[in-house]
Every structure is written in C-alpha cells, then in structure tokens.
Length: 564
Picture 1 (cartoon, rainbow, N blue to C red):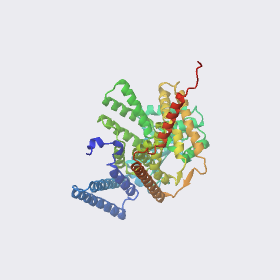
Picture 2: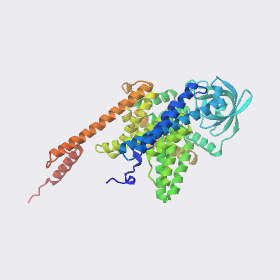
Picture 3: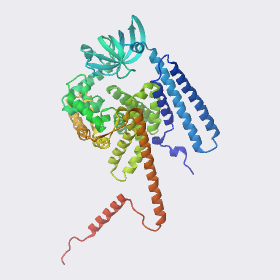
Picture 4: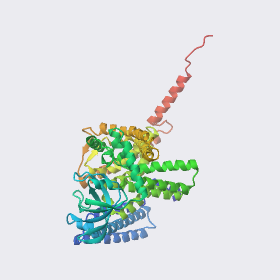
C-alpha cells in the first residue's frame, strides 16, 4: 500500500511549479526584446502567442478531465502542460505590459532618438562606484522620477545609470534625490539601458538617516580594508559586500593591473562567483539567528522576525544586484515556511521567487546574474542529494558535501556561462573545492570587520586581517588554475553553443542513469546466481573489514614472552 502524500512530501523534490516558472521565463525572454511600439508584425506575433496559450490551456484542461480515470502518466502530462502554458501566458502578458510602460516613459522615448538634453530629478538606488568609462569618474544606478524636456515637465519612472565627474561624485549618496542637468542616451553595449551624463547636479532631498548610516559604515569598512595587502584590498570587499576593491570610489586606490589580472584569472578558473553576493550570506545570517534563538529559547514567531530583520539589514548593506534580489526573496519565503512551522522547501521557494521576479521585472529573464543564481540553486536542489549520497561512500561527509554542491551548481550554470563566454573551464571543480572551506569564514569575518568598523574600530583591523588570510586561497587558486594554457575548452558561441551544451549534458545524464541501472541489474543477476555464496563486497567495505581483521590479529599476537 502506498504511503499518503504527507509521508512522501520532500521539499527538495517539489517541482510542481517548475513548468510554470520555465514557461514564464521562456515567454519573458522571447517577448521582451521583440516588443517594439507601433510594430504591427510584433503585435500580431504576441496576439498569436496569447491565443495559442489560451487554447492550449483549454486543451490541457480537457485532457485532464478526460483522463481522470485513466493512467496517472496522462493526468500528470496534462497537468504539466497546463502549468507550462499558464506560465507562458503570464510571462507574455508581463513582458508586453512592461515594454508598453517603458515605451511610454518620456526619458526612455527621448533617449531612443539620441542624446536628450534636459533637467532630470533622480533618486539613487545604489552606492556610487568607479566608472569604467574614461569620460566619467563615477557611476551610480538611479531612478528618474521627473524630466523637463523641451520646457515640458513630465513624470517618469525609468531606470538609468548616472555618470558624473569631479565634485558631483563626492556628493552622491544612496537614497538621496538630485536635480541633474545633463543628457540621456542609450548605452552602446545595451540599447535597453539609459545612460544619464550629468553636467551639473544639486541635492534636492537628503537621504534618510539609515541610508546615511549605511554609507558611513561602508566608508569606514573600506578604510579598514585599505590597510591590507593587494589581494586583501581586492577580495575582502568582494567576498563581504560583493564589491571588488578596484570598483570602490572612496579610499585608497589599488593596483589596477594586479586587480584586473586577478579578476581575469578568477574568471578563467571558474571561481568568480565567490566574489558575488549569493544565498550564502543569507544562509550564514539565518544560521546565526537560529543559534541565538536556540540559546535564548526564542519563540518561533520571534525567531522568524529576527531572521527577517537581519536579512533586511544585510540587504541594505550589500551592493544591489539581481543575485541579491533572488537570495532575499528566497529568505523571505524561508521565513514564511518557519512561521507556518514547515521545513524550508528549496525548489518550491525558487519557483515562486522566479515567477514573482519575472512578473515585476520581465527584463530579469535576460540578466546573466539572475540566471546564474537561479540555475545554481536549481542544480543544488535537484542534484546535490544524490551526488552527495554517492560520494559519501568513497570520501568523508564534509568533502562529499562540498564536491556535490560544486558539481551540481557547475553543471546547471554551464549553459548560461556559455552565453557569457564561449568556453568551458576544466579546472573549475578543483578550484571551487580549494576555496570552499575558506569562503564562509572569510564572509563572516568580513561582516564582523564591517560592523566593528563603526561599533568598535580598534577590533575591525583584526577581523579584516583574518578575512584577508581566508581570501588568500582564492588568489592562490586563481593563480594555479586560471593561468593554465589548457584550462578552458573553446565552445560554440551564442544560442547554438548553449543548445549544444544542453544536449551534451542531457546525453551525459542519460548515460549515467543507464550505467546505474545496468550496474543494479548486474548485481541482481549475481545475487540470484550465487545464492548461498558470499557475493562481491563493496571495495570500501572490503578495505574496512580487512583493516579490522588485521588490527585484531596484531592485537592478539603475544609480542613478549615471560620467562618462568
């Protein structure tokens, strides 16, 4: 008799919402770049997609109704089809709505025709960073709230990158509002991105006190890291806040040649994600809150609120990014599971996070940071338990867990990495295994140094030094695995390369499954054919048995003889 569904429930394998999330991602990725205003062919295409989605959902519902008394496979197939088509419909509608609103924005429309000179009222949404453009000293993400173009004041809500020089960079603060006289135009590397070049700027409204405190905390932390060696100046801010040392606007300048070389070697070695903020930061904070709650015997609701508050404060401290958005959303879902007294369900939370993120911002479907973050979490949730169980038969538990997490994340992120760089890093797994034991400690000590930089300044350099010691293996791994001539395999570019990688991974997975089943069949045949005989023992078990028998034999040998 089959166990009830409550006994079979397992959060890591709950993939019921995966078809809907995949459908939304596909629709948003396909519709967002195609939607242009006053494009009749595009409108007809989108209308056809919507009609086909509705018809497909109706067909899937009819199939589910017809096959309700038949095979379970048919019912599941109909349900999966309905969820995928529903996600496709929602994704297409979200992309159409977002594109229409963006096209109606005056800043976005004016910048499409060239450099639009005007007066813009903006609100900064991130800290100022060092600009990559030689014509500007700093760059900061802003939201344009009002624009005066050709003497007409209009409301706006366009996201842009503000580039400035000189005194303007010194007065920029996250959360403040400014009146900018400058030009808005599209970026050469991304036609959907608006670049706002400031000629002059004045502060219109100061930032809230907490944002001023966050800016002060960051500045003091960067002053502490400026006392470290070259690799510490570059890597400690990256591991702690997701901001490499060469991108910091204030503080001591780092060696640009060394910093760029180290960054390129980390990319070649496949460990660049270590310097990006991911769910690891939030997992460490949640684990710390759980330990404090257990020691203080806090109620479940108080512990959940503590985790939510610490996640919010951590998000304010970090540099905003799509991976931060994904990690924060999943942390909120984890708090919700805790309030409902349910275990955290990784795949379930990831699917909900993906769908909400694509509904609010369909352009995230084409963001590499968001795609890498989601694919890595999906791989860890789906593959890590099986790989860890297999590796635990051959190696210690900690090493098996680290290897399983690295392999599962690398396999699922390879198709996205092909789109970024058409090459396959061969040494990414050993490089990640080399830096994995030190990453968490570097993150914890870096956050402690950031906190003590304001609360207890004399202690901050000590934590920063420990964090620098822990980031040294990252530099060593980059120098060891990122400089090899045969460290990467060239691969096809673009979408064909991604599809080729997906096909290769599918074939490899099928072969592994076939070998697993073949091995199970061979063992079954041997057991049936050798009844009453001792079947072949696992090599690890045989070695353990041999060692125990040898040790027992050595202990039983009389090594000394007493003389009578």
